[in-house]
Image (cartoon, rainbow, N blue to C red; front, side):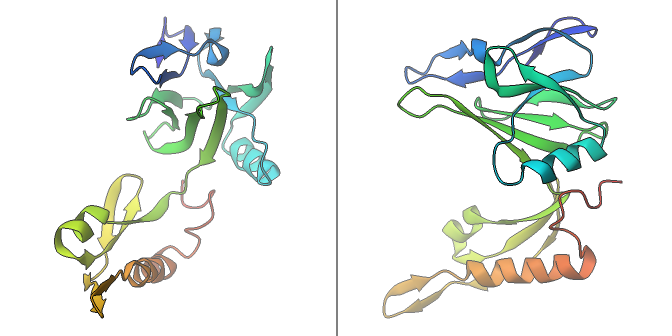
Length: 196
């Protein structure tokens, strides 16, 4: 959620508490940020160097670790990029100047109360199994997506029964979607591919 004037923004993530009330998480607050500045989680997994390279290549500049919170870092976003609230209260996104989702940010707070923040870089093209269609029709299809837009759907495959047990053929639908992507966008699994 962004508040404040275009020149100074206050960026913070909201989360759902167990009592179903919304509260501000102060440790994710960045007060007095300049335009195009935000916070991102410090990437601590094995992909650290790769993710830093991908972000740097598109113009995201790391400005330093947030004081009193080693989980977050200040960043300067490229012109036209911004942080937006997600469709769930524990998600937020960084979108580019063409309104395409480039980074997903997840705030996770297990029952112990220890917060964790995760960052996922987005691929331009992906695949998504249609669970609703499977539940309603027993048909397995996988959609190929460009962001949130479906650009191809695999041929429906009806789940098979054997001795009274339904066998899901999700793998077949996913494999067909992967084959279509391999033919049309061979670098689809590369996070930095096809954005320009």
